[in-house]
Length: 350
Ligand SMILES: Nc1nc2c(ncn2[C@@H]2O[C@H](COP(=O)(O)OP(=O)(O)O)[C@@H](O)[C@H]2O)c(=O)[nH]1
Ligand SMILES: [Mg+2]
Image 1 (cartoon, rainbow, N blue to C red):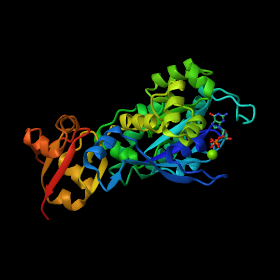
Image 2: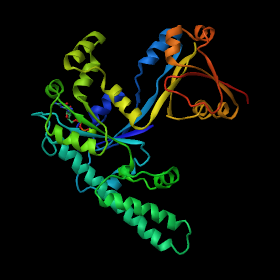
Image 3: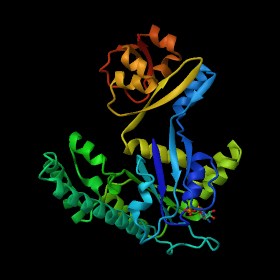
């Protein structure tokens, strides 16, 4: 999974990128890519239970993008990242005498402006497509169907709403994906706060921003990218105390990862053993045989059954063997819908 970090210059994108990936973002306009490990307390417990030689967390690729400016062609700007699965839009709320602000401290206005620019980009993309299709209509029987779909998009954009708002069936969803509309991509807004705002829980334009995001059904998280980077440098006990004092119950990456998973309908199952404890990311509703394919196509092809213990049952029983003895162990077929936290062993034959 790939997530692009966008926003105005000096919003704190690179600082957030560093927080998420522990990777120092360079200067300049180069796009940087690094992996962020998805924290999961369940893995910590599985490590204690199995003492594995290797641990693999779920991971998200983050892209640190150059600051986005008004008047810039959003489509051109984001073309290089059209394959991202979601966007995180960083808006600045933090006050600073030393860091010049792009346009004052107005997170709601920043969100709105950028959203408008993305809508304009989708408009122009839509117009190009419509023209092309109008020309093809005589020759191409599929064009009529596509035209219908694009007209649905048009109706949404005409109301100044993002294409995310459009409800589509699976078939339409698939054909729309090839267009790479920007406002169709899942979007998470991250407001970057300073220490004072983190403590007080208030920042400029908070009410407007919250109201607008809830109207659009978009998730909002607050981070304090710089402070949380500083916390990362502390030893565990000091970090815990500092976070407690700030009223932070969880790290920035935990909060963001949780929001991403929820919003994109993702979940994790685990494989465990002495060799490796590992988290695997799947879409909610994935069948056991498909889930096996995450690990290896051979396991999917030669799938016989899945041996499943729920995470809670494993905790209660202490280990896999005990769970088996207590009958907290299930044999599931290929159509079993894998559940969040399932500990799975696949039996297969190739
Ligand atoms: N005071 C303060 N400075 C911050 C905060 N977050 C980022 N900065 C600083 O703001 C400047 C711009 O941040 P950067 O992450 O490079 O912004 P980008 O242009 O969006 O990538 C840097 O000097 C950061 O150290 C914050 O929460 N408080
Ligand atoms: Mg930057």
